Amino acid sequence: MAGVISSALPRNPVGGHVPVAGGLAANGLAYARTMGAETVQVFVANPRGWATPTGNPAQDEAFRTACAEEGIPAYVHAPYLINFGSHTVATAERSVLSLRHSLRRARAIGALGVVVHTGSATGGRDRATALAQVRELLLPLLDELTHEDDPYLLLESTAGQGASLCARTWDFGPYFEALDAHERLGVCLDTCHVFAAGHDLAGPHGVAQTLDLLVGTVGEGRLRLIHANDSKDVAGARKDRHENIGAGHIGEEAFRALLAHPATENVPLIIETPGGPEGHARDVALLKKLRG
Image (cartoon, rainbow, N blue to C red; front, side, top):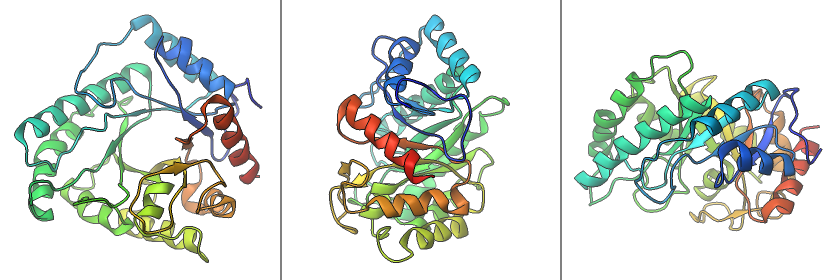
């Protein structure tokens, strides 16, 4: 119900990415309540910059306490500029600093995971060279996650643009292999991205086939978060353009199937759709309806 954050955790908590200007708890959780969110995702830095700001201890504590008391799984989305496959030394180095910041801030606010885009092989590099650099830069960050309350690192594939390192479900295989299938490694599946990359979720058995392929590639229990976004474009278009749930080419029935598949049990859904507070509340309500 809009206006309330549920403390009873359903099979698939449904929520959204919330703005935090003005305070994680003061503004972020207030926005979450307007959409009836059962789970939230936040930025802890400018998503389009390299700054690594310190948190507000009072807001951090209020956010962490509220999420714990009300049973709200929280997640952090790392900045978009991060690319561990970049041929540019400055980008690679800044990516390390930026992701380390997101991981540490996530622990401070009690977040369960940090979502990071899997990046691309720039400068004409081949995939093997780029993945070797991913291993060199990213594996040490994973090894730093030694505390019980450290977050998981959740890899989010892209829509398949350019020299993407991870777009189709099977692309997670080499990526996981490069990182020794680290115990703190997981997947955030973006429905719009995987649809745009060529997995036709709207086709007959499309959701089941896609999720079965993912589990067969990375193993059971690695899918830890879903970005639930419909798509403005058709399957395979390689365009990352999100649409409201049921208003795009994926459609309601695909999300119903997603919510019923064994691989998604206990996996939260975060919307990143257009529309502002009212549109977000409608999307959250629709996903709750589709999960039954």
